[in-house]
Image (cartoon, rainbow, N blue to C red; front, side):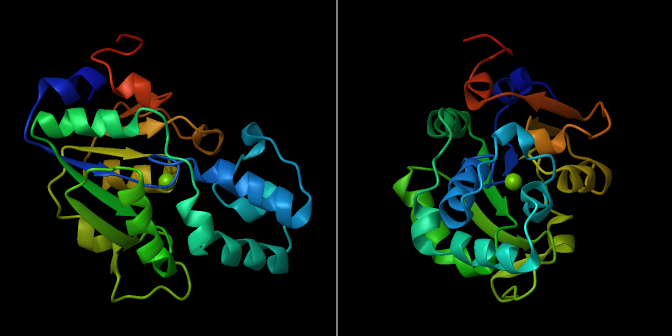
Length: 209
Ligand SMILES: [Mg+2]
């Protein structure tokens, strides 16, 4: 899968992760830990998807961060990445169907739906998936990971290494991986192509316009 293949094809289903794919969640967390703990950490220092590890937090501080990060006012203020809505609009015009598949905690369901509307994200379906085995997941709202295995996507867009491995290995899906500090240790895989930002996806060729 190359970027140009997205625009050269039509009528396909695309899996879209949400956090750190459509929206700049990690940067919102950096602001949060600065405000709550006076901790200043640079984006490039987020070496692990496990933010407790990346930020060096105690269990108690981690629980506090997690609670703050699932408040509606935190979620609604996460910035959408530049170029997302234009790119999705373009793909919709090509006939693609856009399926948001998020591992976000179920307690943030309504705030997330509100965020998508507020940011003009056009999508065909929204699924909460128990990707990471969070405690306190509402299983009426989130489906198990195995439930998406039989879905017929032609492409996935992710930032998480473990999910990327699942998508390539268990679903044989090509993945566009948003290049982030926490996914740089992923072994090279011909089914995985990195991209740097949404303006790159909103072009026919990498670096093109
Ligand atoms: Mg993500």
